[in-house]
Image 1 (cartoon, rainbow, N blue to C red):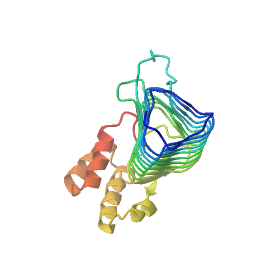
Image 2 (image 1 turned 180 degrees about the vertical axis):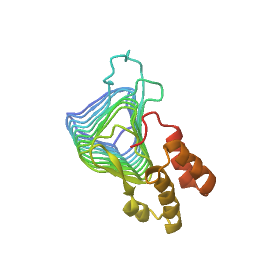
Image 3 (image 1 turned 135 degrees about the vertical axis):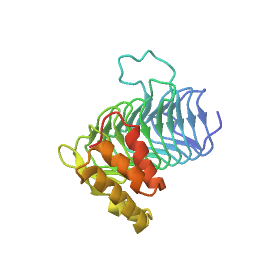
Image 4 (image 1 turned 90 degrees about the vertical axis):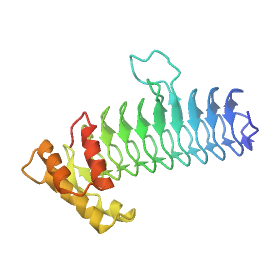
Length: 258
């Protein structure tokens, strides 16, 4: 174990944990063996980094956060499955991240921001730069793609996906897939237009936003069913990166679209 800058004397750090330089470990924190903690990462009071977890550089785990806990899956047989947290990710107070039931494990990307009391279920995948507000609860195998945001107190059903740059309003239930670039709100959850503010913020040109709008007009605002709308999009719209991402997202789904 590399000698870190600060380990509080009340912290419990297993000798088999690998801590890089300038790591800070707060009072009563627990770091089990078989873990890796990257440079300048801070693990605050009472946080727990459990077996099989890798934390990247410059992460912050606030007090009471737990990463790598056993999955809440009755079929789990105790395999040594991993949990991976990317660089610069912030886990606020009492966030819980469960490790996977499969070899790929649970993955959280870089620069993600998980607010207090967020739960990430087993085998979840969270992309880079995702923001999950307080009390977002992700079921097993849920996927939240890059730059997506979910408002507070929102449950996401197992196996559901939220596409890149989508925004889900707080307090609603996600029981079907939310495609990329859209706003979703209401009960039941439904399409609410493009995430125009987010797309502008991240520099999507007006022409690209127009193409995305055309695609979703065919999907949500025409008389065509989904299969027909997809066929028309393939035939009539330019196959830009964004249009391809929308089509691939639809093809890979198993829960249906909102």
